[in-house]
Length: 222
Image (cartoon, rainbow, N blue to C red):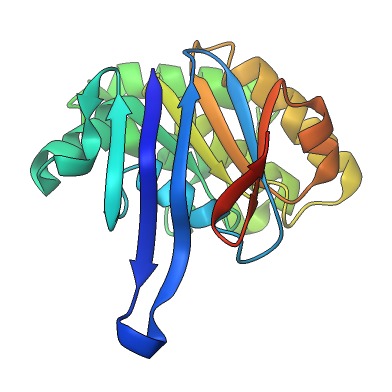
């Protein structure tokens, strides 16, 4: 489903060159959950950005459903991200000028789906993540845990094949972190998606069926 070969990413040149990711090869089966853990600066976020087509590798290859993503044009990548990928970021990236409902509907708008269909789907997802009755609020009117639930609902709105989550519990306390991960198991994998989570949260790592440990941009254990 998702495979990398010798994936590397460097920033800068000469003495200022920084190796963010170094020769990472991995394979993730369809509908599986992989936890990528390691200390800050280990390359977790860089790996997610490369897998999601948000950045280009310096060397190496990325394959999604047998197609090499790492050589795609930006136009093809943009279409792939819209149609097949969902993203959840630590800081939620919700649009506060829009209501909670409109935030979830937003990703479906680019697919040209009718308003009624988008609204029904968004309301269903918000109900499933426990935000029913708060659809008309702005994201800033919700708690951190509630905002992250909305972000999960938005990420799966287009029924993506792959969901990438960067430190999704980074701003949450232990109780909300546990609730969010139960939600991820139910929502993301319940929707049939493969999920990759970058995290330093050992509770998430311990419960993940598959995991790798990054240090200084390299896989040191799995």
